[in-house]
Image (cartoon, rainbow, N blue to C red; front, side, top):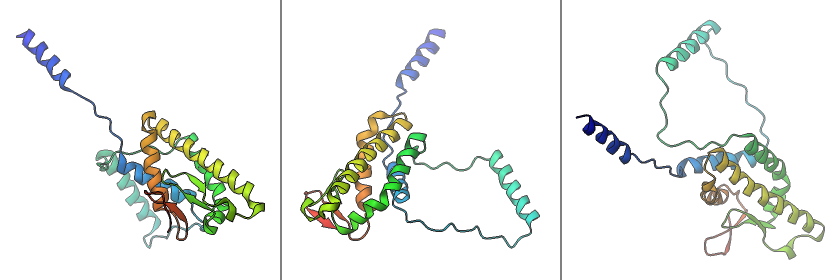
Length: 195
């Protein structure tokens, strides 16, 4: 009987497989959050509206909510979460956000566009004013390097360096989808289109 139990246990453990899949929907959501954060215009902070309830009542409700959350855990989303917060990711986002105002001018003028792989390119170097050509080339090169670094940092933060290509592909689509009106992007057939 003991041999059967041991054999059964071995059989059950042999059947267990771990599938680690790339969370595509979570990656799209994360990409949108990052891109919108990078491209955001400075908007004054909103102040939180005051409750019409007395402060003591609000405090009681908050305490009750906390107690309930301890006893009954909040519902977990079915979708896997993709970690997008690490010192390396925050640094890359910060640098890209500070560069965005300079890039926006060249996006708006049509000098740069988003390629199918999500990286930037100078669409027509001859159309860029001579005094801006060097600046545009440097901005595009720095942005592309930081985008590649960001993808690697996200894969690393999630413990899956093999996800870099999938993260890059997801971001490529999301950069184009989040492009502002009038910006240029490359379609899948290689032609340039304006949003």
